[in-house]
Length: 165
Ligand SMILES: Cc1cc2nc3c(=O)[nH]c(=O)nc-3n(C[C@H](O)[C@H](O)[C@H](O)COP(=O)(O)O)c2cc1C
Image (cartoon, rainbow, N blue to C red; front, side, top):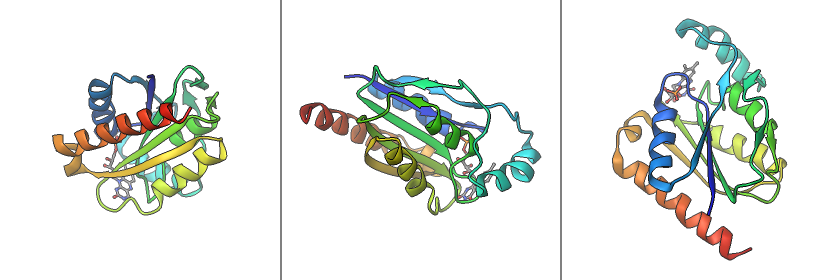
């Protein structure tokens, strides 16, 4: 079984979830960095309009090869009810994603609005088989049971995906 956890995080919540998922599942971590290098204010002044426009950021790494993995996990912060520009770009940057199982999660202060549906649609367009979408609030991020339940979903979906091959 091989799992790749791809995430973007500016203020640490999504990173914290991704790191705990990696520890719980043995997955490899890929952190996507937005080259915009936002300040705290810049995230709101520049990041929100870009997220609303579904902008694709300049990111590091510029290409993400997942051909060696069975399952991928995508984690995004919610910005103005949308995935971040770095996540939009990361999905575009995937190589070898066709036919892979995928699980999506997002972290937000309140409602994720349509964030999960938008990420799912982009991944499906790239040929991934999206098997679950989970929204975590900032209090869920502190909650070990919420993270374990997401880790369990990932493990189950990886097993189901492999037994269907
Ligand atoms: C620019 C910006 C826009 C945000 N927009 C929303 C939003 O529309 N809804 C929401 O519930 N939280 C919103 N938040 C809160 C973040 O989604 C939340 O703090 C998230 O966990 C941040 O993830 P990170 O720490 O991994 O960067 C926003 C935060 C920022 C910086």
